[in-house]
Amino acid sequence: IKEWGTRGSGRGQLDAPHALAMDSKGRLFVADRANNRLQIFDQNGTYLDEWHQFSRPSGVYIDKNDIIYVADSESNNSRKHGEWKRGIRIGSARDGKITAFIPDDNPNANEGSLAGTSGPEGVAADASGNVYGAEVGQRGVKKYIRK
Image: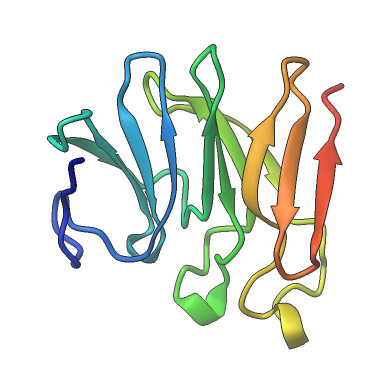
């Protein structure tokens, strides 16, 4: 058994680690949600990199082709993350380039009971490229069909 990290915002530190995924190289991607980043470690806990382009990650999934799916259920103006939009960002776990975005489909997500979270918080995909989002605020699962 191994553990690493302390609470904070520095390299290798974590604040609200919310999801884990591994790529084909065995690198561990940690959704460090409160720090608005993905942190990448080797399996011994050595810090390798961090990516901010996936916004405020609540969920992360990496498929066998190293396509990464990152769910952001919290970005909004009230969290001082105003330019970011809630939704699922899809890209490459190899270089971090974002190739697609599925926006949160709730037009009133910043109001009422969904002001804290809306859209998918967990994410997965199937072999056909369909994406599944687990929605905490709405208490459901949504399937996004690849066209």
